[in-house]
Image 1 (cartoon, rainbow, N blue to C red):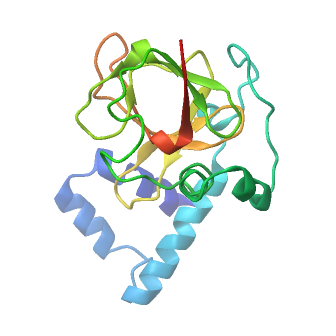
Image 2 (cartoon, rainbow, N blue to C red; image 1 turned 180 degrees about the horizontal axis):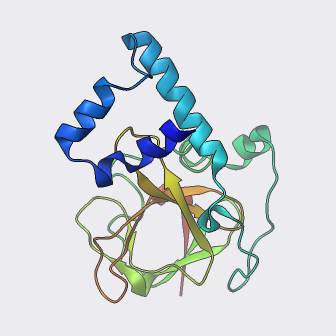
Length: 195
C-alpha cells in the first residue's frame, strides 16, 4: 500500500526528474506487460480504498430528489439511451461540442438523467470554451466528487450525482468567481427543465 500512496502524490510533489527516477527504481516495473498488469492492480486497489469524506453519500440533498437507485445494469440499459448509459454508468465522456447542452442559454434547472435530482441552475452556467456545459456551482449537496485515477499521473476530481452515483464529469479549479470551480459536465448526464 505504501507504493499506492506514493503514486498518488507523484504529480504534485516530485519534479519530472524525480518522477523519472522514482519510476525507474520502482519495484512495479519489470517488463512492459508486467508493469501494465501491476499498475492496473495498484490503481484498482487505490479506487477500492475510497473512504474520504467526498466519496460518501450525502444525506442532506437539496430540493426534491428522486429515489436513490440500486437498479441493475440491465434496468439502466432499458431506461437510458446507449450514450446516457455509457456516460453515467460506465464513466464515459461525450465528444466536445457535440452534447445537447454545451451551448444552451435556456433558463432552467439541470437534473440528473438517471434519478431526476436537481444538479445545477442555469444562472451558474458559463462558457468555458471547452465544448462541454460548465457550471461554477452545483445545487446544495446534490453533487459529490471523488478522486479519479483513471489517467496515470493525472489525478482529477470526478463529479457524481449524490443520489444515484451517476457519473457527470469532472471539476477543476479554473472556474470564474465566486467559487473558482469549473464543473465540466457531460450533456448526456443531464436533463434541462426550463423555467
